Amino acid sequence: MTRDEVRAAAKRLTAWHQRFACLFGRREAQEHSLVYLKGLMSDQQWKSVEPIALRFARGRNGAAAAQKEVVALQGFITASPWLAFDVFREIQAVFAEELMPTATQWSIGTVGVIDESGFVKAGTQSVGVAPQWCGRLGKTQNCQVGVFLTGVTPGGTAMLGARLFLPERWIGDRKRRRKTRVPTGVSFQTKPQIAADLMRQTLAGGKVHFDWIIADALYGDSGDFLDALEAMQQRYLLEVRCTTLVWTVDPAELPNVIPGSQRRQQRGASEDHPLRSVQEIAATLAPHDWRPLKLREGTKGPLVFEFAVVRGWAMRHNRPGSPIWLVIRRSLDKAPQMWYYVSNASGETAWQELAMVTGTRCRVEECFEDGKTHLGMADYETRSWNSWHHHMSLVALAHLYVTLTKRDLKRDVPDLTLDMALQLLRSAFARSELSEQEAIDLIDYHRQRNRTAHDSHRKTWLRKHKRIKPEVLL
Image (cartoon, rainbow, N blue to C red):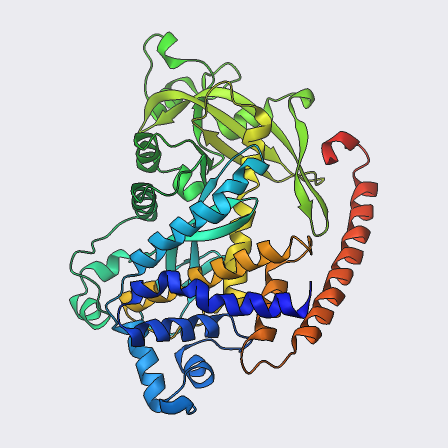
């Protein structure tokens, strides 16, 4: 990796941006979009409109930005008529061209991950803000929550769609809706309903298809969401709560089947009971039913879990359903943590493939962390419906560019991370605080430090888990 390669990667941003420029409308808006992208990828501590404009925008004849440029960039995010939907649609096209071909590098193809992310807010006037669960903090907090559809491949991860969740208390609040410019056609939707819409829109675009969809128990526990995925003929592996009921024998072969909880009340739970919770099923498994598998090499050694898979039949809408896989993942800790998943995959699907799909959700958690730590995903100060979606689409665009840059540079530097690639790009941007060579030297230092730490963690992990067979770790 040379200084010329770093400088060329940064310069490609302007050329690459041209593919998206027409989506923003007039020339001024196109220029604003490039300024905003550079700001999101910059090393500024706070990446809201004002600091971005003051650093990267220019007045007439190249003069330094002033109040006029700040107001113009604010208008671009808040009131400009361009559509975030169009930006996401073009991101999907780039994802299909650049990253989906790498799906052949592993057995699970292209994976779509549904997840939500919270954005803590202090006031009550930002669109959709309310006391609600914030996953990042692990508690209820005054925040906004967005639902995201992310594509995962070996070559990289990309945000393909986003929608703000509007709590029920906002639906009838005409004053706040008008103030935050919520479109009149927006009605209340649950997060699973939003996720189903994001899926339909993405598939309707005709560029992206998913070999698997994975999501947490909020979505796995929604019978309507499962129905929607099956109507799309979409294969899924969704986490469910430990109390989820599954038939262990085909209910069609049982006489006088009584749906759901009524049957359990009449018969009670017992070892020969054909309708049991996934937690109860896991408790009956023998030691030989559990098989270890390394999902990937983590920063602290191999990421290995034990898996068990059971063929069963779904219980949905309080009625017997179709054949499913129950997949159970167990950590190697002395007090192991358990995760439960259901899948509509065919009976011939290998257990290793089901197990590997469970490991893709962490890629989206990393995507959100990168977005919030390095790309200003949570730094916005706008309050309206359009501005939230505008900001998220531009964050997705910035993330995609850094992801593709990382992919290109990794051909020479296999252990390059996204934040390292971003550091290199920043070194070549105008008004940088680091030269290209200084950035390369800094990245080399971090790479060596990461390798040393990883090797140490791996040795410790191997001493702790001597019972794991070596072939599992290949």
